[in-house]
Image (tube, rainbow, N blue to C red):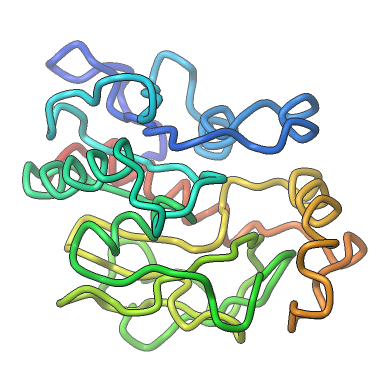
Length: 251
C-alpha cells in the first residue's frame, strides 16, 4: 500500500484532519514549529493533504468528514475536564462511529480512553520523560497498525498523566517499564499512543531539558538526560503506517 494518499477525496477535503489540543513549549516552538507541523513532517505529507482545527478555539467539523483524524498532545490535563476537551471527547466517539480512522497521541490517547469510558489521571510513579523502550505485546498479530512493529523499539515520551483504567473492549498493544498502556486499540480503526511518534531527537531534547527539574527524583527512568535521546525510526514508521491506512480511505 502506498504511503502517500491522493491529495483530495471526493468531498474536496484533504484526507486527514489534525485536531490540535494545545501548543508545545515556547522554546521548542520557536525552533521546531508546533504539533501539527511535526505530524505532517512525520507523515511525509504535503500541507494541502492536511487540515488543522484548534479544538479549544474553533468548531469541529462534522464527524466522519475526514478519512483520518490525528489528535495531538497538549499541556492541558484530561482530568481537568475542560469544556473544549469534553466536547472533543464526544466528537471523537462520533468520528469513530462514522468510520474515520483515529490516532490519538499522548493527550489524544488519554482523551480517547476517557471518551470511551476509561479513567485518566496522574501516573502514581510520576513523569516519564525521554527516549524509552517500548515492548510490543502478543495481541498485535492482526492489528492494522502494529502487526509489523518490532518486538521492542525506542520511542520518545513525555507525560505526567496516563490511562489508568482502560475502557471496555480496549486492547493493549505495547507498554514500557513505566506505563502498561503505551499503545491501545480502542476500536477496529482507532488507536492511542502514549509515546510521541512525531518527535524528533531535537524536540525530545527540548522536552527533557524543560521537564528535568519537574521530574527530579520522582522519575524512575534513566532516560531523563538529553544524552539518552536517540532516533526512533520504528515509532515514526507507525505514524507512516497510519498515513497509509488513511490514504486507503474509511473501511
